[in-house]
Length: 121
Length: 106
Image 1: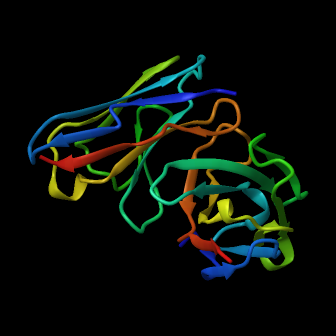
Image 2: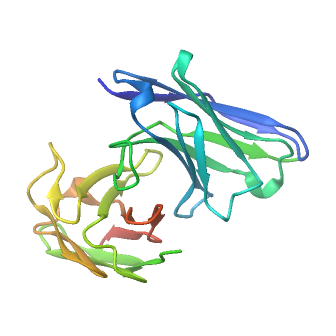
């Protein structure tokens, strides 16, 4: 079974750093891009960026460029989303999702279960 | 950037109703469009990809149509399990979601 399992919920203070993870199983991890998607409380889905785990090549949405960093370690089949200095406005549910293929024209399937990040003083 | 506009934002319907959700792209995306269903506390699940291809395991009451800039998701006979929020997503140029349509019980 193809599966993405994300790390657990986090509670952080503004200004702190954070890295959350997404571990793939049941498929060739390096062969499929992974994207990260934000869902703020009660809101819709926003694409943040994607990584090609084979080369760690990344593309970011202009809305998130410079605010987050996406990385991957293919040796342990894990992708990461990290912040160097969190803000209260980063409070959201974050999903990782595998692209159906290794080019741009594929939808996302499957998705991880989501990681809730709460930033509060 | 390609913008995706869904309508309506909320839809009230009864079991057995035929339901149609529309998604409009700000420029042509050919047929590079997916529809997802999301239930509270759960990750989105793909229903339709490439505008009209039904995902394996998804009931046949779901169908998708359209190309270019206008797309629709139709549920032919709404079932209790279908009350959820639905999102369109374009993947012609990067990836963009519509704002979502919440299907509520009337």
